Image (cartoon, rainbow over all chains, first blue to last red; front, side, top):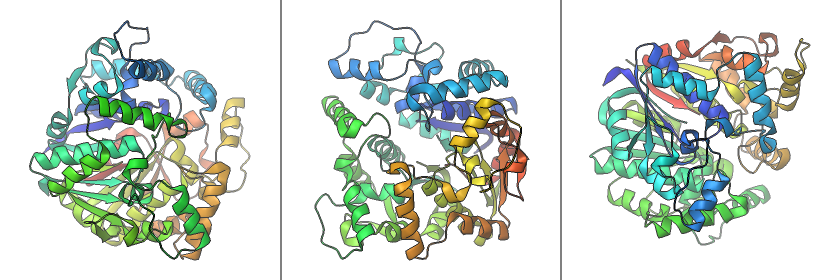
Length: 158
Length: 158
Length: 158
């Protein structure tokens, strides 16, 4: 076990939980940790490109894709979202307080060497293609996650 | 500490989170890990028998029991459930993609020796009786969980 | 690493998850563990004083403060809350079964030496002032959390 390694499964795609994940990731990386984040299910939405990407999808896949937020800039809150109003309030407050946005936290995580891994099985289920996700990701499944977690001393499910 | 042991507290009773839990459990068990899953609060719903079981309950207990899903086949999504429509969509997609259902994942977990433990305190609070739950479970409380977690190198709360 | 130390990030401010957190914390502390709980985002609501505290806040901060529950006695359920009715049902059932309330669990956690830490960054974002929170807390950020987690053998995100 490596006392300088942390992993997170980012299952949630909510603005508040995504923010928490990246604050932990950046803090850990800044303190000299190796950090691996596994994005699965709703968490994949954090990794989507903001622009529409042309892909060939079945009807249900397309519907899912259409209903889910495209990227970190469009996530809702896990509580009190009120159709996006809560998330807007939170974004406004965070901007005023000069707290970094999720997008900024993600850029910083990347600069600090945080490994961001998209769960291929969830991508398949949700009909999300590689070209719909941002650059610089790795693609892997549960075995890869377990390999990383085995080697870390803090493992969170968010 | 045992690098070949994993525990999960399955607090959530959502289809998506239950699926994630069992995919991790099966993956870990297949890789030679001992795995213990503690089902508590809403997570107990995953363990309910699909058929109605006659029990003597107080009014509030009966009401809770009636409102909560009976078993893995009736779970909803944690997001975008839309009164069950989202869960139906997800089930349809998973079937088409030949992804195992939660019930199949549970059967496989059992075959791989994953220990499934129902939290007795939550059962008491939610008015769920042993005879309402599927076979092959263990019944224990927080002390048992902590004993298992102390011995494991990955511990998740889902 | 210290096999007798546990940490929890309490991100959620729901009655059910708060109850679970404190049951784990009390169990672990009673078994001789050092326990550190980090309250962040909605989890801060668990720590709010039940009475209204006069503070100077901007409009959005005041609105957030007004919309969020003031303390452990007013938390809702993460599922089936139905505008507080579900939480009321749960509280009624727990009282009848003589299960400790969150407030009682918190008092017991304190008596057992559980460290309760409020996340200063979340406090800033949500506009929550120290004087609005209960006594006996510590105030710290992500670096403090990581320091504690590095030293523990069970780390949960709730």
